[in-house]
Length: 188
Image (cartoon, rainbow, N blue to C red; front, side):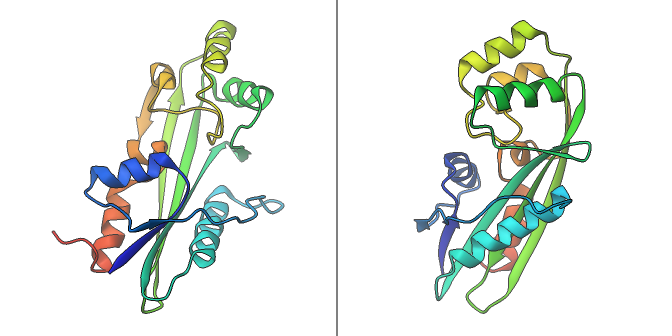
């Protein structure tokens, strides 16, 4: 059985390698990731993961897709593309807890669609302006949901984590392995 990873994320590829999974193909589908009005973070992540899987469908292949969103209260935080966005995200996260939700969709060759959602809670220490400036200068925030990468310099600001660390990086490995086992791709 062949596996396609519907993601351009090098972090997801590296995380899969941690559990001994090397996709046969990687394809980054081009979908509109704009949230719908009043769309809940969990529903947004699920909708986008399903859309990525559908846009990447291949006959006789397993297609693994995921989407990670960061929410602080009821507010969705963007994948930061500008320094201003990153600064706004870090300022909002400073001294607060937030949710990192990843929806995983596994489309099977027999037409089944298996899904899981992982919700982790992350608490940041209160950040000074100098700490935010230093993190912005690092450039790690580029393209990251919520404007930070827990596996990098931001780790020094995380005072609390409840849930899956790999989820916060971008792919919850336990849930992913469970789906792959359920589809007969992984043994053991």
